[in-house]
Amino acid sequence: MNFSERLYSLAAKMHQQKDLIATEEATKNALVMPFISSILGYDVFNPLEVVPEFTADLGIKKGEKIDYAIVRDGEIQMLVECKSLTSNLKLEHASQLFRYFAVTKARIAILTNGEQYQFYTDLDAPNKMDSKPFLVLDLNDIDDALLPELKKLSKEDFDLESVVNAAEELKYISAIKRRIGDFFHEADDDWVKFIASKVYEGPVTQRVREQFASLIAKATRQFLRDQVNDRLKTALGDTAVSVESGASLAENLSSEEVVDQDLQEAVVEDDGIETTIEELEGFHIIRAIVCSEVAPERIYYRDSKSYFAIMLDDNNRRSIARLHFNRSQKYIGTFDEERRETRHPINGLVDIYQFADSLRTTTKQILESL
Image (cartoon, rainbow, N blue to C red; front, top):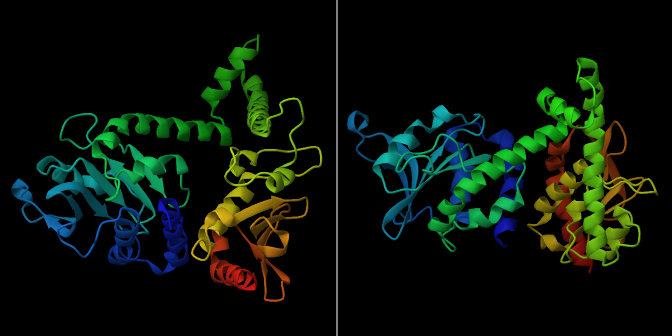
């Protein structure tokens, strides 16, 4: 598997085993060591590369340990502090990282609970770890845009100077994206007031703000849809025609073409088919689960009014699963050896991981029948 495939595979493993991982030691063994090994590429059993329980003299804190020190060319390059998967990461959890950062040559510090990985460096002051991470990797919501920078910290592609140089930009881009995402989900009062003041000529009263809150949400969705349509038209090479539905495009565009399937996430066309963000997230979860059996680029989706299908090789006779999300009670449809579908009620996307074994079995059966 390539770098991104290994990362999605680890995310799938994390979801499968999450309920069984209750301690810090279990988190290290099940998630953090595999991250250091399979994602970053360092041999966790070679003390020349990974030093567990690393200690250094820290004045009155003599003998204090950091969970892992990652070594390259005889120098400590990264420090890793682990907390339990059940813990929410807080800045106070990084106290040992702060102290060790000042007395080693490490430029990268990682605070993790196995689910989220926070990467720190010393942008604000030399040899002093920043109080905010420049990169946050969340296995619940992997941002593919961060993967090239993360890959630069791997043993194979290690480029510390490039990572540090890009760290400040990454730090602020990530913060801006999160803030924009907040606005899209639920615009706060300041944002509503700002936008309203630009388009409304009268005083922006409380009544006006309440009215504009829903208008801004609607306009945001329409703006995203228009941007998607423009990108799709460009990729199709014909700006004079209407964009086809998400379902038709899934049939006509391969995964290697310019248009990424994710660009269809907000498209609502004349035939009434709506490919939602939640359906696309479900697709990515299922693709991550079955990538242990087949290359992810062979997994496609196709939307319809009745269901959202995930299939092998864009062939509806090779369906792996169906998502029935167009109703209040959501269902995932799985298939048996006779290709008969069984619908299972689910409460949310995380419940998809309960069917990981079934999804992998179905994928194997399809491959064996080819």
